Image 1 (spheres, rainbow, N blue to C red):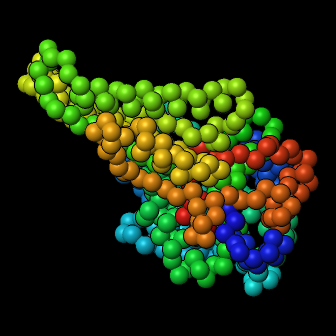
Image 2: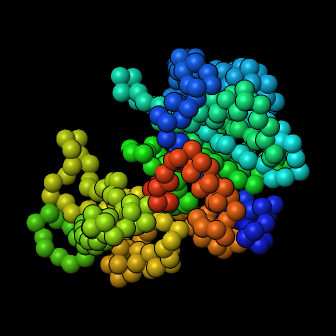
Length: 376
Ligand SMILES: [Zn+2]
């Protein structure tokens, strides 16, 4: 994501976030050439075996493991505890020209709770380990980076990132790092193409509420809360279907459309055996998880919500439980340029070509990640 007001060709004034998913298999093959693949796998297993699943992630153990890796790689390390028991570990590989903006490789240490027999590693310990193994390989070959390379291992991404990446991004420590580019998580590639994401959709969590006169269950009358809510739900459903049709027809990628999914319905008058069956309630609510790509006009969606999904004319109100902005602090959509106007882009494209890789069409990440905290 570009957050710069400077000229496109100037590296020093561009802070950019890319979400880049390394094609794991090809990387592990390349790594195997430098170091025994079984050693790499065993380090990976060690990291995986540390239980950092919510709700009780063992962050200190993960931090200790990363610090031991840093030591074996002779990297400088700092453990920052912005919030108690939630360590952020930052590793530093000094560049030969430390005055240049640095490179930050971010990964989160926490994982979602899962059924043990279905455990995977894509999100995203595999990426954190790939960073470390790539540095191991480069160090062994005698490579010295021109720019300083930082690695951050942050907690809490899976529960919003506010005590992890957000605290780091807002800190004086981060300012001193003078970061020019951040690479964060992407999605695994199912084929030989490297997937790259240049933006992400913004979450809007919307609750709409209908009010109306309560009444007997046998009576037909106008403007009941249930009837008004159902009209809105039908409206939202049609909008959802139209957006989904664009994806199904191959006209747009998943990240390019506004997705809307209903996540709760709340209505009815509770009784000891369930719900009162002969009473039409005076209130009814529905909640929606909406994801807005930075390529759309959010004002258009807001108008739609106010005029069609929760119109005052049907006694409806709405509120946002969360409403991320698709704009940066300069009022520009949060997007990383994926063309020659962006010097980092050409470098990345060149690096993939150099290893005979194929770069997929740049995509918008369908959900949100810690990357959103850095360009500001
Ligand atoms: Zn993740």
